[in-house]
Length: 401
Image 1 (tube, helix red, strand yellow):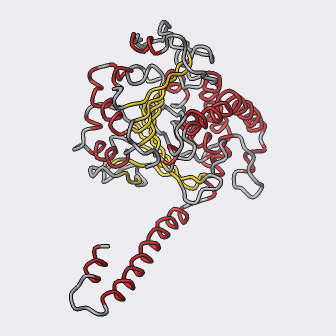
Image 2 (cartoon, helix red, strand yellow):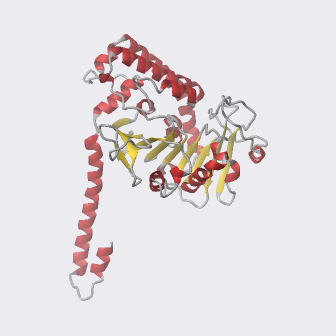
Image 3 (cartoon, helix red, strand yellow):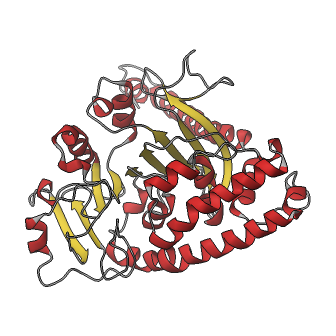
């Protein structure tokens, strides 16, 4: 646009307008080609085997032409398929099929165009995607190791059976209570065969009907950019401090591929410092995002996490959480529109967690909250008559920007 202005306004240049239009058309064409090339690069990397792996882990039948098809003919794998079908039926009925209609009524129009952020997520892509199904990009951050990218062909039958068993154990309880318990993740996601968060994410993507195009192990470089790790698991000659995985996928009707990034890190003051590599990454990646905090362990009530709390508030245009997330007192009425759903009953036991009773939040729930038809509980808050959920929409921000 600057070049066009200079040529069109150049004194004494009769051909200026024609040259300007021609150059503008040329630049437009080049920019369009650049966008197409970027998309084609993603498509060029796409390997059907990634999607087959995701389907295999999820217990979804693959075709006879797949390299994985022979492994689906064993007795233990047929049992895995049945178990995963039952698990996903429960997730669909108790969570996804209920959140969908609720979302359409209670989440502002246009917000689906925002990026979506889930701090302290564990492997819970289900709630993130169910609440924000049309986000162009998703970022999940938690302590759990991303693990290795699974390759069933590299495992013998005994190891594969053991790995699939661990997957079933880690997802089974989630299907019942709608969040991952730390003790279960620690035990089952550290198995020797199919470990970490990555396999669970692939299962969720596949079960949701999304097509996995590519999977890359990544880290954050000193410049604040994510980059793929080399064959030795290094980035710039050293192990990344914060390893992660980048999954590129496509949903039905998507015009362009979308991405899911999972990073293993402890959220603290340094990680959001704008001069640190992670702070540079977050500042560049998170803007006007929709944030979900669920089973947040009440860490944002602690002074040492103030910078993280403030960063999330500054970067989010919409937040949905339970009472274990950001304290209600941090949402200033002149900045946020708040709504409250379900029931707030802060007297309940949670192992290894300090419960913060919020008197100001109790006043908001006096007389009852808006209907909450799905379980959004934490700890012993199981059941639709016990969970609480609040939404915060930043005032003066155009959603979908």
